[in-house]
Amino acid sequence: MIASNLDMAQLLPIFLPLVWAAILALAVFLYVLLGGYDLGLGVLFPIAPSDRDRDAMMASVSPFWDGNETWLVLGGGGLLAAFPLAYATMLPALYIPIFLMLMGLILRGVAFEFRFKSSTYRWGWDLAFAGGSIVAALMQGVIIGAFVRGFTVENNQFAGGPFDWLSPFSIVTAVAVLSGYVLLSAGWLIMKPTRHCANGPMALRATRLIAVAVFIVAFSVWTPLLHPEIADRWFSPGNMVMFSPVPLLTAAAVIGLWRGIAKRQRFAPFLWGILIFMLCYTGLAVSLFPYIIPPDITIWEAAAAPKSQLFMLYGAIPLLPIILGYTAYSYYVLWDATEHDTYH
Image 1 (spheres, rainbow, N blue to C red):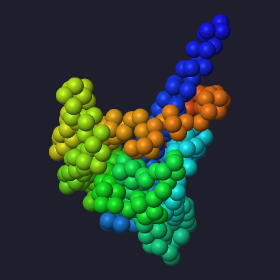
Image 2 (tube, rainbow, N blue to C red; image 1 turned 45 degrees about the vertical axis):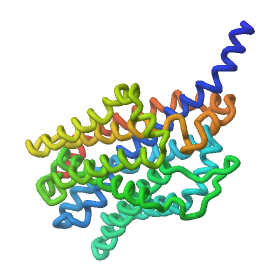
Image 3 (tube, rainbow, N blue to C red; image 1 turned 30 degrees about the vertical axis):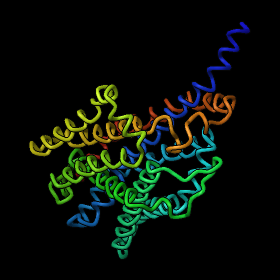
Image 4 (cartoon, helix red, strand yellow; image 1 turned 45 degrees about the horizontal axis):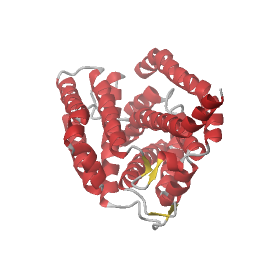
């Protein structure tokens, strides 16, 4: 029994950071995925041909959009609780883009609620919704780019300047994320056809797919150039074979999406878009693991005390299925209702 307790005490500091890294990775991915098509809708908003089209676009996401923020809260709160060193290092490095992202989310949230109640100034709320969506999407891309590029760390503290997050790589990543969100949103609008906007200019076009494919290639080439250890991981002979399914499946997903567009399929574009996001996210995880602050701090170095992580896990274990359950239930139950609303 004593030996068993000793083994458990030795395993927890290794096992718990992996569990919490997986939970946070899931939360971030689901927010990017579920919030992505929602933010992309705002980007497409200005090119909608009429106010009725914009009403239909908003009605298609109105039951879902606020619930998607649950995953953002879980990701941010979980990072603070499970990896306080990473939180304390990243936050000073990303104060400005995080602040701008939150302001964009607040602006689009207010505009979402008030545009239906305003007639005289609806055009202003439309601009606020589009502007908030674009700013939030771009800042999320900047944050991802800055995270992949890495931070200047000394003595486990951020030692860079307030604008270190701004670089050519983070700018390209921001535009790439924005393009991906537009792709998801256009697929969503095809999957949720409405009487007014199913065949309008916001429908999915091949040019958007080409843009996303170009950004995937650029990101895949640029990332190994930033970190030699990432290049070694991907291009060593043994790993090339082991990791080859990720780029091969990504190429297959792009081709599948292209065929879905060409054949004017209803569900395929959105589903293929989800798979592309999932594969890109997997490739990023393969590139950066086990670093939570590239390229200096691993998940084990940044982890909270095992007792703290274990205590939080007791709450996360029942909470995660509940969140996943009501998210899935809301999409299942409200699907037909939103289709009815968008048609009428």
